Image 1 (cartoon, rainbow, N blue to C red):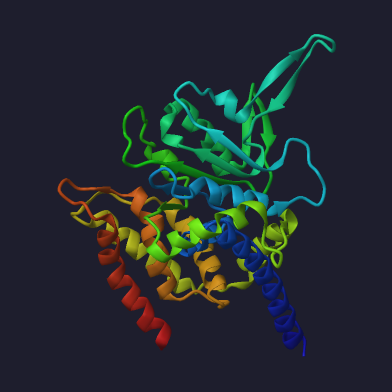
Image 2 (image 1 turned 90 degrees about the vertical axis):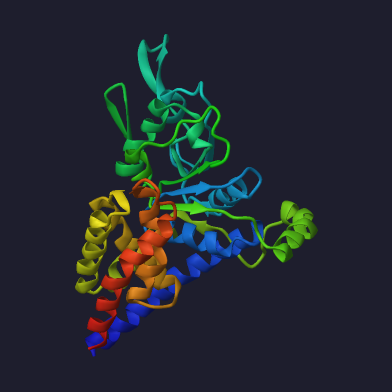
Length: 336
């Protein structure tokens, strides 16, 4: 009887988490048309406690998408420093303190007081991140990895929900600073936003006035606590077979040994992939991960971490070839 009750309670928790995600998705698809796949990947990253790098030309909806996500989250209780959404426009003259915050001297109290920067937010949009210097880019490393910032030898905690959406334009290389490997490795996904199809673009033009004036009535905002709880439920109640971890190591080994790859993927990428697989399985209506989930997400997780050998251009094809053998073996083993 207890196992039945536990199973029932588990399904109830998963159903509540699903409702939260559906509300978020409804608001995002209302704000940004023709980007369903990108929206799904961003929600997966949010649920997996990762960060996202969006790459495409200006005017493709990157900023609108990030802003819609931030405005879809509310706090039950206002917190010091923390805002639902903040945006930083990265420029060559930006300083690290413009992102993290700075200590300001108060002549009345004769003490320094910390003035928080825009990094103190649930959702941070780092717009055109490759237009600023490596010194400023590195100011995000500690925040993205440990959810804290250190200013003048004092450490300040960020919120548990802290989520970065960074954007960059791949074609405009003048005055840009390519992200170093250590910075790229902090992003769970690198997503390329191609042009939307003709029907979606027509819908954007015809509905822009309504979308600017209103929000979806049937999709209220979600709370910060609901999202944190959804993360916990997915982590605890979506099953990953131990054999899947073995297969991921086989994939990583194949990539590192491939003559088409000059530098392979990190162990961190494998660790970050696991909760992303749980989130994808959850969004597909399952409470367990299957090999198909790995095939879906691995190119988005591995591609920006690989350095290809000279003459090799299609990183996605390289990843797919290295996935094939381990995933076929995993599929056969789970069928027994």
